[in-house]
Image (cartoon, rainbow, N blue to C red; front, side, top):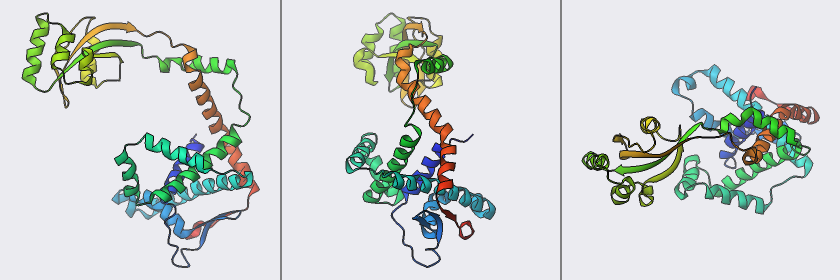
Length: 312
């Protein structure tokens, strides 16, 4: 079963990325494609919203009129869902305050580089003001869903335990090793350091003196690593080493690597107390996904909805 909330949010993100830029132009473009109560979506707006999807299609797909038509119809249904939820926001009197919007913008900027944030507007050809309006609508959709579908959610200790018993192996990596690392820019230098290590020189000292890796000042100590955390070409020799063993020189695009295993240990079953908040979040998400379809169907039956799919 498809994740209904994910479908809605993904559709909304596409919807928002080009919102606020329409030039309705001709009377044909002003024809209404979707009406939900007093909310309407015109053909011009629909075409703008669909444009990023069309741009992502390859040339063969773009030539296939049936495939394009199917994509437009599927996207139309997603936009209907989005408009139904926003209509419900009107009914509930929900809105996004200036403070909520400012906090969301701040969080987005905090998690993006300055150039990445600017690139967002250049890539989508959209102004920061329009982007804020798009973000505001996305936040409103999420607020409606949370209010309607999580308002009576209570999670019992037994439900938490049952979820933990079912999923704890996903949070346990099995084996982990604590390693020291030396990164060198040239193969000749790496071979020389490798020989010194074979002759008994101290790994931590050589790391501090010669390594160009960030952890060099800690004697190359990277802490504990688990399988899947490093590239396979580095991981395989590390996990084959015995405690105290030193790896052969390994080459990557970053340079030449040498590792020493300080300690090996098996991870134990994770403590349930460390995962309670994650478990609660996952249970809430699953409940929202399960309840979303019936909830949306109920809203759909309450509102006057018109869909003119023939003109798209």
